[in-house]
Length: 224
Image 1 (cartoon, rainbow, N blue to C red):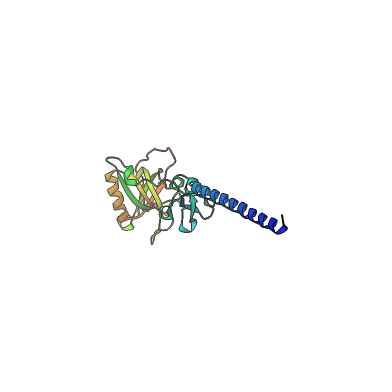
Image 2 (spheres, helix red, strand yellow; image 1 turned 45 degrees about the vertical axis):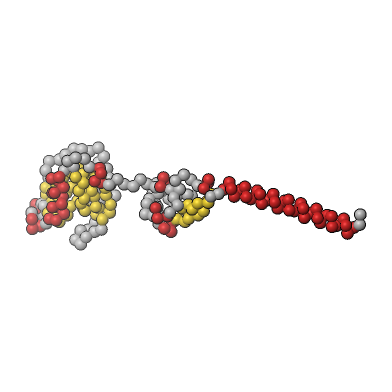
């Protein structure tokens, strides 16, 4: 066999083998795509996020993943998560879902029973002392023209259903809180009136388990 004929034969054999290899690779790629499909959008953490962090748009990103590798319940729309707080830390690139969020607080009105009311009041309070589940006493200081600025222990051992920071108003120094209290209808009327006539309403957090009640207490001009 001549050298030219041998070269042509080897070239033809190489082309055949190359075609077989390419066909095998293509078949494997098709099988792999079939195993991974379909691809779905998933919201992930753009960076490492800490537990308790409130999610913002810049904390989130959308990536495409094979459906078989996506965590159950993973969120596909960032808007469903924005503004909510994480209940657990999430690493960079981790899938995000409602299961990882802090539970949404129950509406205060749904926590009261028959004969009770959920009354909201904005009052002075020690920073961080007033929170849901805490029991408080309510102090009311009247305007000077309606009792010489006397301060009264108006309500005792009242349960806080919800609480959030409130902006300070003119003439009202110090931290303030908007608190929803579990009260009777009569107490709800009193608290509403106190917001109008009082110079200051203050909430005093009680020690856990302390349910003792004091007698009616008031202090006024005699302290000056």
